[in-house]
Amino acid sequence: MSTSHPDLVIVNAEVFSAAPGATSVAISGGRIQAVGRAPLDELAGPRTEVVDARGATLLPGFTDAHVHPLAAGVQLLTCDLSRLPHSPERYRAAIRAYAEDHPGLEWISGNGWFGDTFPGGLPHRDFLDEILPDRPAVFVSHDGHGVWANSRALERAGIGEQTPDPPNGRINRDPDGRPTGVLVERAGDLITSLLPPITAEFAEAALLAAQRHLHSMGVTGWQDACVGSLWGLPDPLPTYLKLAGEGRLTARVAGALWWSAEDGLGQLDSLEERRAAGTVGRFRATTVKIMQDGVCENCTGAMLEPYAGNFHHGTESGLSFIDPEQLKRICVELDRRRFQIHMHAVGDRAVRECLDALEAARAAGPGHDNRHQIAHVDVVSPDDVPRFAELGVIANIQALWARRDREIVERKLPLLGPHREPHHFPFGALHRAGARLAMGSDWPVTDPNPLWAIYTAARGLGPPEDPHAVGEGVLSEPLEPVQAIDLRVALAAYTAGSAYANHADGETGVIAPGMLADLRLLDRPILSGEQVSAAKTVLTLVGGEEVHRDI
Image (tube, rainbow, N blue to C red):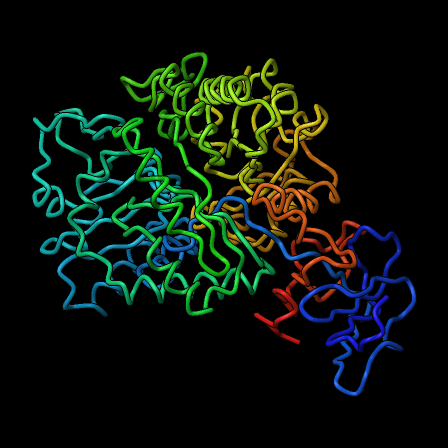
């Protein structure tokens, strides 16, 4: 133990660490100096700050393994529907108020709508036309897989009855063939590409706003799951590099460079160039993000068997955005070039295609420690569950989704059918099979509070503090009780598991001497399993430096 006085000592805490029963942590020079059962305040010198946790839990800082901070920050600073009750009246009032407050905007845009707010599960252009008959309006759905536009925006984009569906996208239509105003997956680009470009200054403000919010939730690092131009947003790479170079990026961030399904293997050299330029300060562009399918709610999630119920015509079994054989070649080459691969796979067919591709990469490059991962894994065939551990593939889970809310019960489960429901969000099965779990929020798709996700992972229920779980039809029984995981397993997934996914496990993710002092102190104890989702963050440290305090 060092004889120098620590900078900070936290005492009387419930420490979630590698030392069972620990109650105190001493921090010096940005690292953890000591962890002990006895109070460590005797180490304090005249300049040491001593914080009495009063029995509250001290956790490693959370690493969000799958998040979109620029999109989330833009949502925070524009017309944000995501935090409203799922009510057409509340949506109408919010959109009208935003438009009235911004009379000079040529386009009215926003984010965060939920399909279950509307009869039939999707909005319509007429709703926006009533509010905004004279200005184009476009709103991206909460999950980022749908765009809702009014008639004026459709006209600006030249979208009409004769407009064909673009590759990997769909224009939803009324029975008479007219577009409804909902554009799915890449069809949304037809309109979002027309939005006035976001300035560098606004992008910077948005990313900083997202960082402040994540720090207030105890998040000290993340993996940005889309470093590229998407959803009408600019490429966040220049913003990251600027903030990191100026020391204003206080989080530790891995960037997943966007893989364009249309550009194929020809983009490999440009990705290497972006990686070479993309290591500044606390930012590293070391990962490539591949999207293999869409989502189940709009029937673009790729399934082994056709959807049940009232599926969308033309997508009976969903969409694979990249041919599976081509996907194998892509993964082999990315692995050879020592990129980490971060794959989006929602349906069981997409999960299998991704596992097959990563198996090919592993066979071609045995021994590479690239730590590939598959995110979301909404539905996984039981035959494929053991393959995660066998292939060393990380299951990157978004646990807050695994509950019976209206979106799940009314829109998703009828499409899956009862035979697939037991394999829906199979966190428990993956854990029992030895899969390594990492956890992320996918914010702004859903709330970034890690403790809400951890509560849901352990209980299968929506946290009562979540506005989407109160008065919004969330049922009192768990989604699939057998798929729940232990509270400590869930905590480890969001800390040590996600740090491993970011190649940061040697420095962060656990509370132990020598590790970086990336820490989160709560306002109450939670390790008994009580009050997990109600807990608040009172102190967040990154490298021993305070980035959030509410004591």
